[in-house]
Length: 507
Image (cartoon, rainbow, N blue to C red; front, top):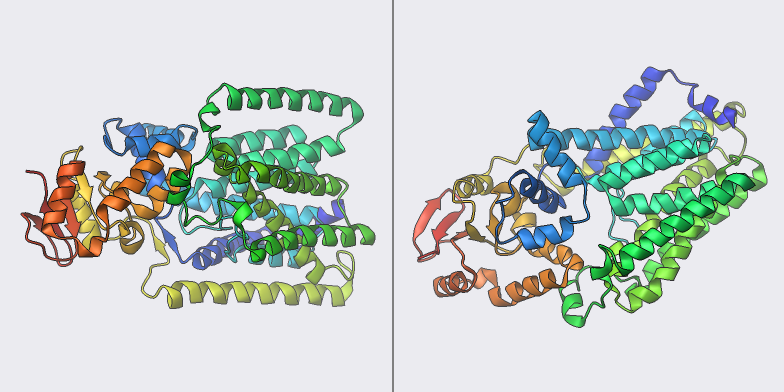
C-alpha cells in the first residue's frame, strides 16, 4: 500500500494547500456560512460563561449544568480564555477553521491509504463538503459554526489514518484527545478503532488488549451501576418523552421505513464495495479490521434498541444511531473509489486518469454550485462569515440587557434563538424564561429539566397572543424582570429601538 501514499504525492504540496483553503470555503458555503453564537453554541457559550463567572445564570444553571457535568470542552475553553485573554468570537472562529483543516488533512490521508488516486482524493474531499444529515441520526456531517463534535470527528478520522499506518498506540492517544472535545463521538471511534486494532493484532498483543478491554468494561459497568452515570439508569416516562416529541432522531425504534432503509443502505454500501475492493485486490492490509470495527458499531446500535425501546435514559442519551456517521464517511470514500478508480489500479493509464479527473471535476463543481445556492439563494443577504454577533436590532436590545443585573430574568419569544439568530443567554448573558428548541434538546439529559421546560411551555401558551395582564402574571409566577418583544404593549418601557421594545415586569 505504499503505492497509495505515492498516489497522494503526485501533486505538489502547494496544490494541496490551495485545496485545503478551497475545502474550508466550499464546506462553509454548503453550511450556509459561518456564524458565531448559533446552533448548539446556545449551550456551549453559556456553559463557558458559567466556568468564567460562577455567579452567571442563577436561575438557568440547573439546565446548563445538567448537560455540562460530563463535558470537558467548556472547562478547557474557559481556561484558555482566562489564561490567554482570547475573545470568544476569535477562539471559536479559530476552532472552526482548525476542525475543517484537520478534517481535510485526515480525509486526504485516509483516501490515499485506501489507494485512491490524487484525483479521486480530490473527489472524496469535494464530496465531504456536501453537508447533509446522516440518515435519521440528528447529526450533520458539517455545521455552520464551531461545534466540538466536528473537531472530535476529525481527530477520530486522524486516529483511523494513524491506525492504518501501523501506529495503534498513537491512534488510541488521538481518540483520547477527541474524548476531551466531545465524549460520545470519541466513544464511537474508540469502538471502531479498538475492534480494528484487536482484529489485526498479533496473538500476544491481542491477549493484552482483551485484558485492557475487560478492565475498561468493568470501569464502565461501575460508572453506570454505581458511579457518576448511575443517575441516568432510569426509565423515561411519557411526561419526559413528551418534551422530546419533536426530536425524531432520539428513538430509533420509532424510525419510519425510510430511516431503516437509509441505515441498510449504509451497511450495504460499505459491505458491498469492500467486497468489490477485496475481489480487485486493492484493500489495505488493515482495512478488513476497519470494516470489522464498523460492523461492531452496527452491532452495538442493534444491541441498544431493546434499551431504547424500554426508554432507558442512558441508552437514549448516548444517541447510538450516530455510529452511522462513520459508515457514511467510509461509504463516501468507497463510492468515490468505485466511480473514479475501480476500473484499474492507481495510475492505470490515460483512460483511468481522465475518468478520475472527470469525477473530481463534477463533484468539485457540484459542491461549489450547491454551496453558492445554499448561501446566496436559500439565505439571501447572509454573510459568508459572521465572526462576531451581528450588529442588528436584536443584538442592540441584547446589549442593553447585558448591562442589567446579573440575576435579571428575561421573557422573550420562545423561538427567538432561531428567529433572531442568537439566544438571550448567548447574546445578553442573562437568564431567559425559555429557549424552546435548545431547552427541549437539553431536556434529554435530565427529567427535572424536562419538567421545567414542559411547565414553562404550558404556562406561556401562545407568545404571539401575550397580553400585558398575562405578562404580569408570568412575571409574578416566575420572577421575571424584563420582557423583550417586537410589538407595543401597555407596560412600563425600559428601552426601545427600531424593532424591539424592552418592558419592565418586576414591581
